[in-house]
Each structure stands twice: as C-alpha cells, then as structure tokens.
Length: 226
Image 1 (tube, one colour):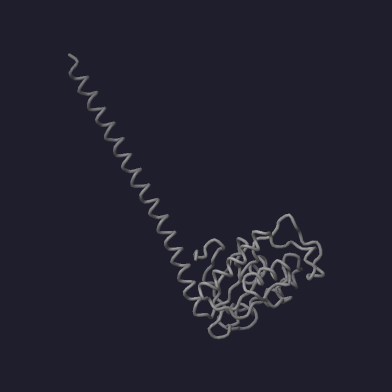
Image 2: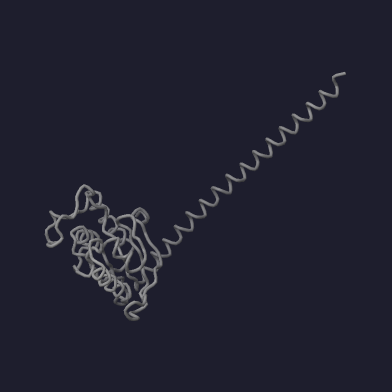
C-alpha cells in the first residue's frame, strides 16, 4: 500500500540531489572562471609593466612623476616663498623612503635618465633629489590647485610643451610635479603619490595640439623587486 508514495519520495530525493549536484558544479565552474580572469588580468598588467620598462631602457620617453608620499598633517600656508619648506606640506618619512626606492629601482633596471625638471615646491624638489640625485626647478610646474583660470591655462600649455618635447637620444626626461597639473594638461589624474606616468613625445605641434601619447603608468608598489 505504501510502495507508490515511497517510490515518489525516492524520485523526489534523487531529483533534489541531482539539482544540488548541478548547482555545486555550476558554482565550481564560476569560481574557476572568476580566478582565471583575475590571474589573466594580473598577468596582463605585469606584462604591460615589463614591456614599459623594456621600452624605457631604450630612452625616448617623458616620465611624469607625482611627488612621493607627503605628510598630510601639514598644509601649504605660504606659497610666496617656495624656498621655505617650513610653510609647506613636505614628504613624510615613508615618502622619502618611497622616492629613494623608486630611484634605486630605476637605476638597477638601467633606465637612462636625462633632464629632471621639478616643481619648486619642496616635496617635489626633495622627491627629485632622492630619486634622481638632481632636479632643475621650474615655475611652469607650480601647483595649479590655487591658480586662477588664466594662470591654470598658462601652466597647462607649458606642461603640454614639456610632455611633447623629445628628450636627448638614449635618455628619458623626467618631470616631478603635482596632480592638478597633469589633469589639466593631459586629462590624466596621477594617483597615488609616487606614481609615474609615461608619455611618448611626438614633437611640438603648436599650442593646443597634443604632441604626446600617454602609454602607461607604474605605481610605487609595481616596480620589480630587485
């Protein structure tokens, strides 16, 4: 009398097990696909950085470096005299180590550095000195954040010219400056502090024309460990 309900119950149980097994298989496949995409993305990013470094070894690029990590407890209170570091936001201890480490990586990788031009702000001058051992200050790289519209446009045009200028044969030109400047000149927002954006200069084409191509970036923690 109970054979039919029992058979029906067994069939239902089997179906439940089959559905659970199918769901488990689908979840497993999704996880495999998910981690595969992550690994491919990481591999692609690493290959891109390796390719960038290889090309930098030949020279011919302009490297725009945002100053290294700064002490956020400090502020720029007086920008009239930028030789006075006491009235500015300066590099933190970690930022000084960061700048030195980036410079060491660049030297170890035999990336040839030619001219080094820096904003007159102390955090930029110090970054250039720690990373490259030198730097020529330029008022054309003053922080645009507090500039009026006319001054911002002037600074943007000046930076576009620097990004467009082909460096000396076999070298890369370096610019050490701020976020807003690059955002205005190239529509690129350089984050985090210490990031290096790489441009291929195409020669000056005239005011308002982009004579450069943005080809990639290397964050402070992406330099190969030597």
